[in-house]
Amino acid sequence: MIVDAGSMESRELLELASELNMFDNHYNWMIVVDSLMDYEGICDVFRGLNVSISSRITVYWNRVDYLDVKLYDIWNPSHMHGGQLVVTEMGQFTNKSQLLLNNLYQNSTLIRRRIDMQGITLRVNYVILKELEEPLEILLNARYKPTRENLSRFTYSLLNVIRDMFNLTYFQDQSKSWGYLQEDGTFDGMIGMMVRKEVDVGGTSMFLRSERHEVLSYTSETWYLRTCFIFQQPDYSTNIQNPFLQPFSGSVWIIFGVICIVFIFMLGLFERLRSCGKDSSQSKRLIYKHPKSFKNIQHNKPNFKNIKLQTGKKLNLKANKLLNKMKRSPKSKSKAKMKPQKNSQRSDRGFAIFNQFLDGLLTFISVISLQGYLNKKANLMSLKITVLTLMLFGFMIAQFYSGSIVSSILDVKHVSIRTLEDLYKSHLNLALENVPYDIYIFNKTKDPLLNRIYHEKIIKYDKRSSTTETNIFQPEYGVKLIKSGSYAFHVQESTAYEIISKTFDENSICKLSEIEAYRPTWLIVSLQKNSSFRELYTYGLRRLKEVGIMHRWAKIFFLKKPKCERNLKVNDLSIDVTAIYPLLILLSFGYLMSFLVLLGEMYIFRG
Image (cartoon, rainbow, N blue to C red; front, side):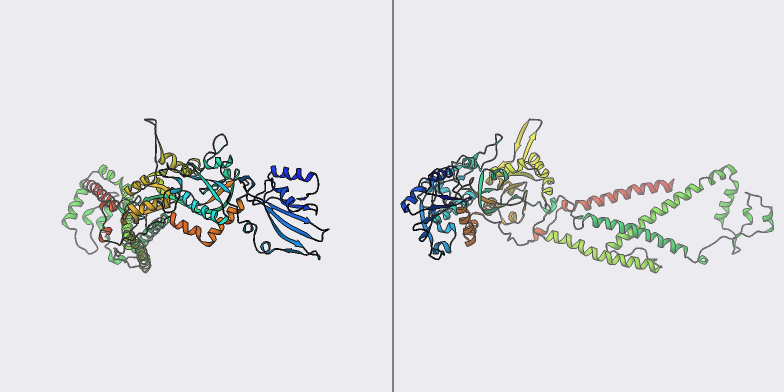
């Protein structure tokens, strides 16, 4: 924007621009002044206008027919806060039309040139969640209870450094909430005060959200806030999963099943080939002779007296009795007995197949568990190769399986709850810290799992009594619930760990685990929308981060998780009955099945 200050309309134009807040960093102004106006006249033009630290106004002062031209930089710390106008010479044009700038404007940025804010007073608001028991200034002091209201005190410490850096003065106030969008479209808390121009700077860092961006101006990030569910891992004996299935995933167990079926099939095939390859001379066979009397034998009426063995020996006494019994039996009985022969052969064949399957399964388990090969009649080379390969496979797998079981027992911290889904399905109760942003996020989330956690585990509605139970507690009480082992408490980690380091023993600290409900995010310092101090605070906060001051204050206010320094003891390796209950169930089931099968066998063979 180029304006000739000598014209009559220029004054009205500058006043209109001041009312529309156009002297900000969005516009560059060039004010041309002729030789009729002196230095005081230039100051009078801008003295009553809304000029700020972010203004970019350059005065082009032509004193002698463009032979003596000087440039001036005009700004004000804040006209709205009682600042005084500052006019600084930038440089001049020489007779050869060369621009010579002063050293200050050659080697420094705009903020560095305007570092003196003349002690103007800015209104800063801090979010204090609890009732004040002492003056606000004492609470915000760094040496007073480091973990109480640590987010406000952390930002307060940073703003104090910026105050000293730029020669500012603060008027401090408090509110009980950061501010959230209401049903009528307005904001409450600290944000509502900034929207109504009651506060210049938000003294407590906040989340960056889209609805807030429309009414606020953001500066720079200060702290990477991380909140999570903190809880004690259940003991090994109360693991929510079967410890004997954990070493391998479901796909590995499926592969085991396929290998078992293939091995049983191959074992049956090899057994069939082996039985077919037996020497026929080793088996006894009955050969009938046909004497002359055999010619008189009618159909279905064999003469058992004349039947002899190939060796020429007569039948023994038992065989004679059996033959006599068969001769005395009537035809109807013999026919009735001959009819179910085919069915009995089928049942015998099915029983043989089932028995062969059980033999194969038993052989597979014995080989895979390194107990040896039960069938000693492995005459086929192909069967030997199959068994040898399975033994090598079982040896390798057994190392992984047994090593996983042993390492899980030796591990001081047994991790059975690893994800948010595991935590939701576990026996642990869930609770939230009583802070507005946590409650707001869980209540407004679109994540179905977080929604179920909030409405089923945290906000419990009893239909019988029509009452609602809320698990929302203060940090001190929530940490006590963590220590009891029956609760998972969602809290800012630094707030919890300061209390934990003073109240937990080594064993409890080693059992602690964390699960994030939502991703950590950067917190930022906010100002009024289109605030002229945005560049100032952005530069100041980034400078503090660059030189390490921000990191120093973070180490004071945000504590990390205490280290687990417990040594392994003999008692830590003890396992109670509940840890092996799957094996006891398996053993009991096997005994029961064996007894039932025994009863069935007794009934069949005695009948």
